[in-house]
Amino acid sequence: MIRAESIGEVENNANIEMDKIANWARDNKIKFNEEKSKVMLLTRRKRKEQKKVAVYLNNKAIPQVQKLKYLGIIFDYKLTFRDHINYIAEKCTKLTFTLAKSAKINWGLGHKTLKTIYIGEILPLLLYGAPLWIRAMETGKYKNKVSRVQRLTL
Image (cartoon, rainbow, N blue to C red; front, top):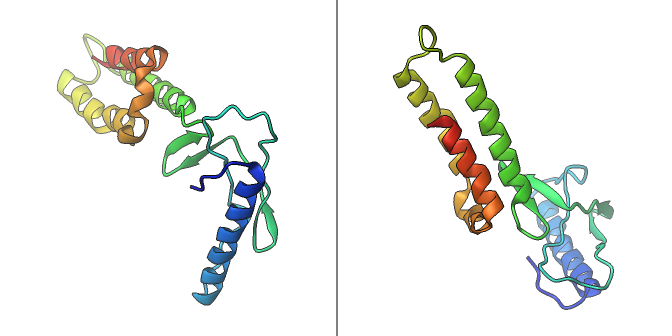
């Protein structure tokens, strides 16, 4: 992460660092895939200037994105984690409804089995990466989404 005052300064610093990375990779016989690389400008500022940055790896432009998924966590350029929370809430809700279809009063999975599936599948989805995005839960609407998922499963 590079702190700078202007977009031009950000671009310049990022390209200097990318050159260092490319040189290190070449010296260590490693090749980075430019096609899979993305650049994202992280900011909480409301800038009046252009927010596009031109960053290059091996003389190829890296596309700029507003959000990206890294190690299963969806980051957005303002670090609100809105997309990540929506994603996990939706995924857990689908799993919960799937479980509900297989758990009937007279037939289907028992309570103990459902609890094991909840602890092994739904809870890890809800908690994965929580130290990164837990502050986003201070916003009421996000807290309600996750709470709704928990109420569905209990």
